[in-house]
Length: 264
Image (tube, rainbow, N blue to C red; front, side, top):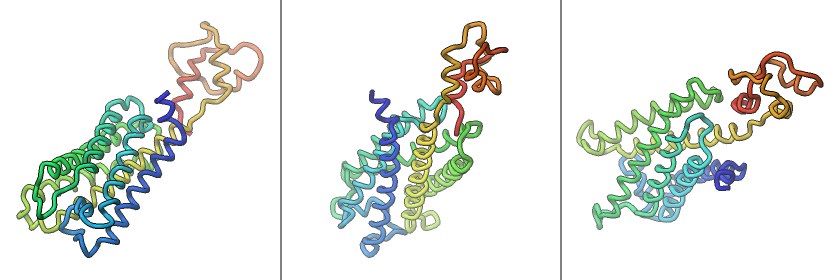
């Protein structure tokens, strides 16, 4: 029952809308709080300290968490994706914590809730980068759109490089004056990883819309053990033969799994 809910068309549309809402929220914060927050030197979480970021920041983060949670429930349209779904579910939890626990202010300093925010947000970036790398490797031989395959590789490379730069700027702020422009890396990560989630949602929706031809279903129901091979492959024209009366000559594989794995 729950699996069917995640696999529904409504869930796919909700996930895509959530990513769009998250990106729109961060865009509005950058436009309306440009005088209060320096996008070059200040972390993204600083938007949560002034209006309208007080509301928009947690809402935008929660929207991205919702998209990751839906992906964890429905999958990303790849085979053997259990670990990827686990990582996406963990990312959703990390983003939820980053939204609930606000960053510290100059007056409060690095409080315990600010530390929770810092490390859960960082963990979410790391997990999504790992998801990007795993998906890029598994999409190499998978039947997915070329733009999704190429886009995932680009996201993986950009995210890994930017994350490395952000880490260096955080722990070695004096190196190349990285502490003065650490906000740039965080914003690049936010953009490319949001794009990753959107691409994975798009591929998941595309995979869910793949249908099995009616003739293949009829063939699977009427095939006798003598006409079924263990190769798991359907000869060309098997669907046409299934609609025609008479016996099917040659060996016919299990039509449902074979054709269910095809892509439109």
